[in-house]
Length: 394
Image (cartoon, rainbow, N blue to C red; front, side, top):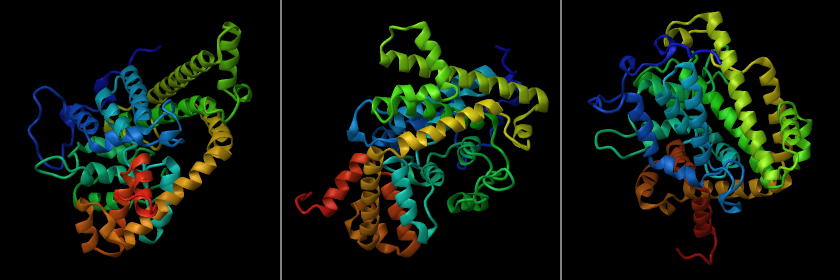
């Protein structure tokens, strides 16, 4: 493995941070990026990730990944990659831990349902919701709403998937909350790429969920192990492990294969990123942001392998009839709750009801979306029962 890139070149340095929205004395024991990470870990939204699922609903089993375990896995991978590249590990970890805070209950099914319900009011996007949580909805501190994170952490989270506008963007659209922040508070430079630590966190997310979805899908019996032998990347690794350990039980065979997949993907990312660093020769974080493409990346071969794996998981896991059944139920729960609270804000809990009754239209819809998006799977099921099951009196 090559020597780490000197951190003085492209790593984000706490001493050069653009600071926070609300000025605070610096900690004598922690850097500003360490404090960001710690505030995220102590946030109520982070604790709720324990009962928010990726693909399965919480009551389907204790061994499947949740948003919380996924975020921890992403953070571990991000720290390892950042250390190898000489980047700021604390900043990468903070963004990795925060990236899924805006996800609704019931995974992508819940988000799809809430987005559909919110269509007349501007739609719903989990990345925007994460930003709302970090800047508005967490209410723990005496002097400000949100967590008052550094510019670098907020910028990296907003541009988790790349620039929001411009030729390299996916949708060429800036969500309303983020646009308002950029106008009224500070410019997050949404037309450029994020710093290198944010790019590491984003690809660590890809590495983590591809591998753990294979693990969870096999555990749930959604597809047999033999089907993986036909896929690029995972197939050769599975064959190699099977040949080397012919008597290995299936559980260990799966784990050994997946841990090797993670290692291969991380190694590929490091090699391709070092190649791009040697090509572009950036000497600062600003130069990384100003490039025409990402600095942190997989090789073209690995990107093709990743697409093949995603296509397999989409067909054999995310669209499996067992998952579809729960998806249908989950969407119904979200739709019912949204319609109920929008029409009857007096059914909201006390801390939400007074505001809900005082506003109408788009503002009330956004408040209801904030409330539902914060629900865990089990809380949403309980609230649905309380609102629609005549036998539940609470």
